[in-house]
Image (cartoon, rainbow, N blue to C red; front, side, top):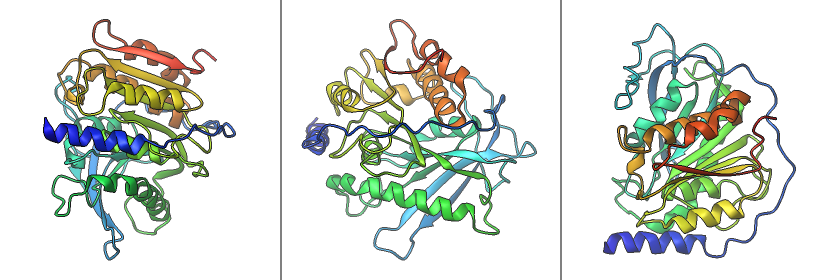
Length: 318
């Protein structure tokens, strides 16, 4: 419990000083090719951004794979796609989700969610942050402040990579359609990427069991989805609710009564199916302009006694 209190104190301190968000011009998503009607097989690859720099950034990428690749596993709730290393990328361009892990964590620990997003038609790029990951030799909680810049460094790298002849992902990334998502400290990292002057490439955000950093929720308006358990002992739900209230533009808050810091991210646990459905609908709407996904999000997100949903300015039915 002492460690939990320290983590909570750090994250609440990071929220301190956050000013009100600054409204910006609405950045509507133009029409894009239809969202895929069926799940893909899933591939996985690894690379390092700036391997010789002061903050090398190992990255795990899950991506839609060619139909000829080994098929993804059964669609039962407790089984998900089996990612296959370095198989060919499926034809076409795919929106990109930058996924940020929490303190003492790793990208692979979030694979039950990220591989399912990849199967749904998204490239998911998950950095291993240098000073907050599970294996960090110089672990420092305060380094969360530097992670939004790492997220943007990864976005710039992916934009360059898409134009790099011979790279397996070249020509497959929709470099104008990024979302950011993350859990716990990764949720704060995600919020910190939405600061004044941020690139319009970043079109949406998902903050899971997190909150805002100083300067968050400014710049071009982007839809945001917040996910939080109301019995979270690490980051109190009130922190997530405050971030939701401070954000501007379309937003939704998916609450999980009686749940803690992330057990709902485990397949088979109460709330996992609703979190998966809501986040997938949200990404399909914001990155594929899939209005049907937007309209079904409220029904997909709510299971009485398990989840609740609050929305603000969601253009449902329009």
